[in-house]
Length: 149
Image: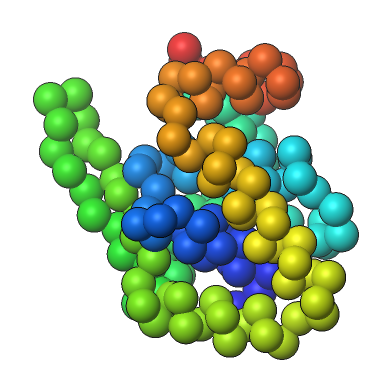
């Protein structure tokens, strides 16, 4: 595990149910955790580029898949009338792995990861995806260039 994967797991852990609803939402939450509340973890952050629904990171997608294969995160998909919805859930092993990894970090790094995750979850996880995208597009206009919306 690395710091950026820890941030991803911490975002899931910050939610009372340990979930994030939707791929787009998860991408935006991690993006905002880096952009809005970034401090000393820059070397380990995801690289985002403009894509169909704003900032997108292929490495984030790969990390989600790796964490799922390791049994730390589960991905459920729900069929909707207009496509699919993905729900990401932190597994008990993921909580344990996160706790163990955070214990190896300096107190300042551990605090930064936990605070960034909590701030993003509190401020952005419960708003609609359309409001989340509107916020991201307004604050980070360059990431709206490839948007299909």
